[in-house]
Length: 158
Image (cartoon, rainbow, N blue to C red; front, side, top):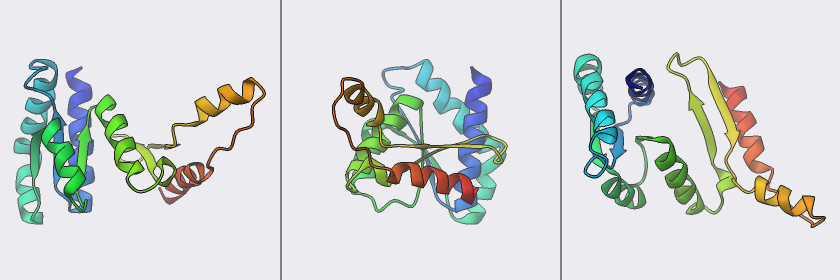
C-alpha cells in the first residue's frame, strides 16, 4: 500500500540522514511501471517535501537508480551509502554482496521500523533450512553460528 511505501521512505531517509550517507533507492520502474514507479514517485515526494534541505545541509543526497545500474555501482564502490531495496531485491543483492566478503555468516540482517525504536535482527546465513532438511534425514550438518552472534549483537547494540 502507499502507506507502507511512505513508511519505508521515511525509515530509509531517516537512517541515511543519521549516518550522513547518501541514500539510493533501486527499482525496475522501466519494466514494472506502475508498481515500481509508485516506489520511485513516493520516495521522491518524501525527499522533496521533508528531507532535501536537511540532506543538502549535511552534504549528502538521495537518488533513484535502476536496479541494473545500482548493482554495478555496488560491486565497484567502497560502500558508505544506504541502499533502499524492495524485499526480493534486498534479499538477493545483500546475499550476493555478503558472499563477496567470504560468507553470508559475516553479514547482519536488520529490519528497522519507521519509529526507529523497534528492530528485528536475524541471522542472515540462509543455510539453516537446507541443513535442517539434511539433519531430518539423519545426515551430519554444520551451521556457522557467527550469523546468530551478529544478529544478537545488533539487538543488544540497539
